[in-house]
Image 1 (cartoon, one colour):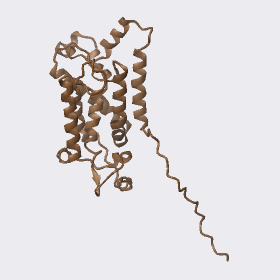
Image 2 (image 1 turned 180 degrees about the vertical axis):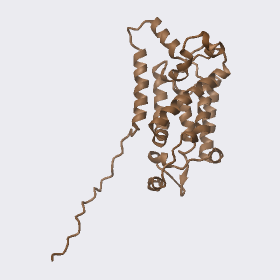
Image 3 (image 1 turned 60 degrees about the vertical axis):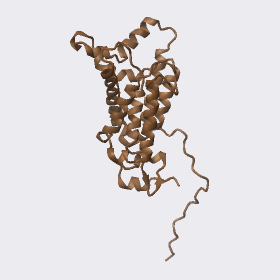
Image 4 (image 1 turned 180 degrees about the horizontal axis):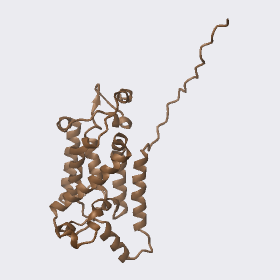
Length: 255
């Protein structure tokens, strides 16, 4: 009887594998596509000012809507706490929100999945809007932009994206596999605390009219940012889907 030959092993490619520069989850790409499509639609040159004003009034968030009986109004109060987050007032506005969205939304979306991500967007958008309404009750100004949602994603990332394993930090591409920190545990993390302090300082400057990035000619709803961040940081556990232990063990580490 002939001896069995061992299975042939293919030689390994010694060249390092290339990692895509923008390896974003499909739901994040869809979010960016929606924001860009809405922005492009609102900047159609042939549209009149009256039509644009109607769009802003119908889909922007206005605190004054909630200072009067809802039965005496149209239905805008029902959807504007969410639709305002899809509108942007200028190129710099949408560019900065999109960049921050790519950074912080990707690990959150990988961790909680597309359906929970959409629910997180809806609820964090409403939380940001009503934080703004609470401080400016009855105000007739219009709130637009995804900054509140982005702030909520930043708050959520503080609960899992910064922990270390065995003294080494897990690669940001696999940050969604980190264990979730409790609220007090996150506040005991030096990295998280430094990040939160810097974030608060940036918003404090905005509150005093000092804009570090973006269009300084437009007012910034710093209060909506705080509402979103608190929502994401304090309530992330309600959306979290803990990774399996074998996935955590397989996560690559940065030296």
